Length: 173
Image (tube, rainbow, N blue to C red; front, side, top):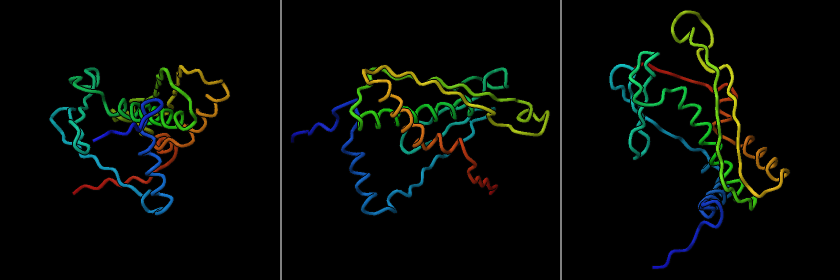
């Protein structure tokens, strides 16, 4: 059995991506997907998220917030989700554009006021601002990198989710 190389640049399987895009063009309903996670509380501020068949992702709070620091806290995970989503976007779109990425780091920082979370005030318990700095080492021209950056920031699912109001229905059963 021979194996056909599916990656030619940035270690991205573009055959899989192109195949999915083709299926969606033929049957647009294929694009309507649902993603699932289940979170189990483990005492204190510890919990774990089970996603597909992966090992559980731990979550906890730092000691200053009453936790035992056994994992990143949920607001840190939000930053990580955004950074990971952007990394996927840069890898995919750079590959389509023929841009080799030598190195990519994404630094994220979020401003969060704990007053509401701690019950000291009413108001916004979430981030008031998220700043992202993308560092790409590539031989691409500044114009190519700017076009890549624009494409990625305008198509990031997590970026779009965080930048607009999303209906949220939390039920108690």
